[in-house]
Image (cartoon, rainbow, N blue to C red; front, side, top):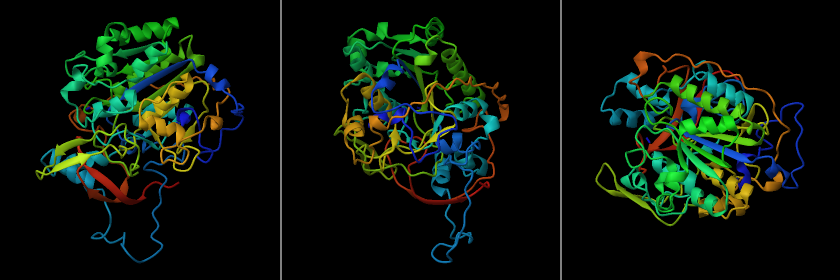
Length: 464
């Protein structure tokens, strides 16, 4: 199961990729961009790392995935990468996968380092090619769904490191973005398609919070997904739309659900927005809550601000207590920025300021700037104000908004899923991936499939 100094979300790194030809930039010395974005839509899908899901995208060689890497051992000293006994490897992810399933079957073990080709995720690939792909967007927590979803919606998990029952009973006592929006007269709805419903195992994210229940917002501001399609068609979406997919059988990309059904779902959401009368004022953010145990070669940043001073302690497999202080981000996850006000085919990396990173609380920091809200926690506060801090992303003055990208993204019908893979953790065979990564296995509370820290990596693969 079941993370813009402001603004990170709309801003583009000057060194990430040259702007598309014939694209002009607005003067960013004023706040005119704010008048163009009146509706923000956030969809959080489930359990895919960047490498396993987007690492095979080939339309742009700037993407830091699993293609376009050539290994060259120019110095014959230290570790000899050509010598099998010394070569670094993906053993950490593979070992933990084998332990989890209590088998050392090679097919099962390889699942955590498999990846998809563009033909297998045609919808996501088309969205990335037509809009903005982030290839350094990290989950908020190196753990499971609900702590990450809590960081997305409140800037903290309130010390929770696993999917415990308080998430199912309106049990989180912190102020969420939903409460803050209501306080400031900003409209919002959490549309959800849960097959279980609040309190029964997979809450819509607004229902994590005690305020949502006591204020009555659970009755007025949580709506079924069918209402989203009606509101989009009528042009009556609220200022902030937050979408929970079904989880975890057919809509959220969560293993073992077929990838084609997740593809069809994001296609439906995009087309509902693209056809809406509100499209020209809409910013759509598509991200994933966490990596789901799948491998990724980019080490998550450490020494980041925690959402609060709470920690999470869990007993490790060796019986020793281990405490996590939330000062480290999670694994990279695929993230798209979709709007008529963004450029086509941009690969967004770090923020403009040195050390800038994107993470789930970047969404909150962007909303803070867009609507003049106070930061909820140190995690999004420091994103905004700490000009030399590790997570500092972009200054509002650096914000580049493109003139409308009017290209209508043509989305293909998803490829049929194969029955043989429905019970697998991932749906496709290992491709031409040869990764040599050194991993140190450590314990990080709350991770569902593996507990790892990347130390270094060199890869060989497709030609640039």
